[in-house]
Length: 161
Image (cartoon, rainbow, N blue to C red; front, side):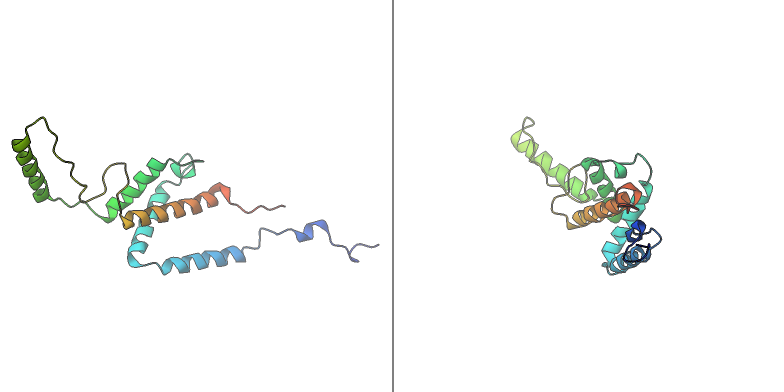
């Protein structure tokens, strides 16, 4: 039977890497969906992309097999602190010191004053309790890092089956 009569060559079923129209369409769709973000989310997304640009090098925490949760949290807190710049509240500090002095006068110095709730900015390595902005920063950061990890080495399209 001659070639071409009811037969197909082996290589005709493979996808060629030159067909990028589908990827371009997905990229345009992604950019359009990002343009629909609310104003604060756009601001956060821009800061997240800036931080991820700084981390895009070999050996970065972004490209670790299992990124460190505490390190990722610190990156998120850095972004949070850029959004909410530090605002000095000396009146609050003086009020706390007066409360501690009164407590010490009443109960003596061998007792510890009651623990004060966290005020103001997100401080320390622990999470900020019940802060939806911090949660949104983490979601956008992890999503952006996932996309960059895929682009870097994990999710590349295979050229063969």
